[in-house]
Length: 441
Figure 1 (cartoon, rainbow, N blue to C red):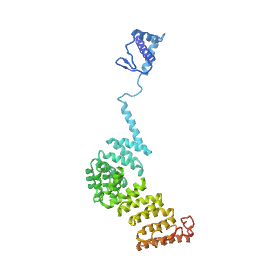
Figure 2 (tube, rainbow, N blue to C red):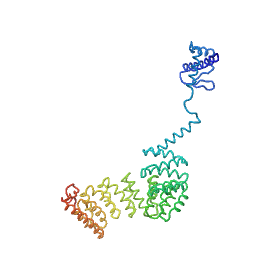
Figure 3 (spheres, rainbow, N blue to C red):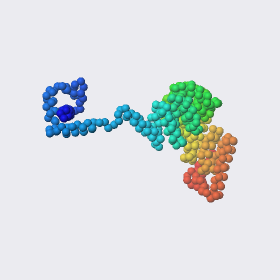
Figure 4 (cartoon, rainbow, N blue to C red):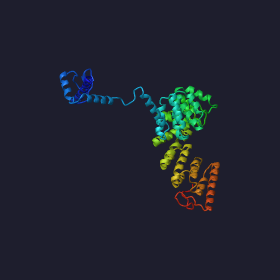
């Protein structure tokens, strides 16, 4: 009993000392090398003084049985209520894995993509297996294409050939997306191996795998990617590769993109690139785009540039676009620009468009703009459009346009005979009203 009383007394004294120190300190403190945080020395006060304070804090009238009970209660409250350090990580890992599995199959595409990104950030056999199972569990269709790109791109970091073998078993469109992602990633690290695989797995020159390789290769070897693109035969696959290369060149800066386009050896690729660049520049600054296109030498490349600028400008302000085209020298480029202006303007104001066209005499250079006008207004007033069609100078083109217009007239006459409402003209009145625009001179 005496030992219990002694143990309890020591414990109470310890609690009292901690309590007293807490009252005496104005802020939290720590003990380091016998020093108190904020100054002072743990041994600076006489032990007798400390002892007297301890005694003053010990409750009076506390018998040994109560001390023993208190000791047991305090001891029980100090027991940890959580798992040991050795057991806890395994449980946490299992819970975390369950959470990731649930998020990988979430109906929320943002949450699902975040989970795929988290799992595939450090691709391992286990992670890839989980991602593959989760991908297979998703509904088929375009909604899971983003996950497919993430999965195949990450897989290519550790086993590109294995990823491509798996992709080969997918549906046609998924195979296209998956193989592109794998080859994009593979060619960033080892383009030669990716090119060799592509050649071994496709017979013919128009290799569809090259587009993915060019996309990844361009990140580290832009010139090499350009050369590979130019080596491809004319066709859809080269067009895809050219589109990707153009975007990557544009991301490097407008001047870089323009220089890249000008240095292309293939005329068809250069025409495509210049036309797209003119459109991009026009979105940012129409005057700058118009100046760039206007200073080019007459030819197919200038024609494509003028076409792009005129189309974009006419969509915003056809009158201003028409004024710009008026200032261009006569030739194929001005004819192409007029055609784009007419297509936009005639839908909004056919009368003003007809008046603008009447400023120009009939000629071979006016055939395209006139045809564009005729086809745009044909449904509203086919009879008046027929008059315009007769002014086309090229006989073959004129006969084809007139033939198409006669079919429109026949359909409308048949609809009228059946008691159907005639199509309204451009002013919203019935088709029997007067012509909405003037005839060609």
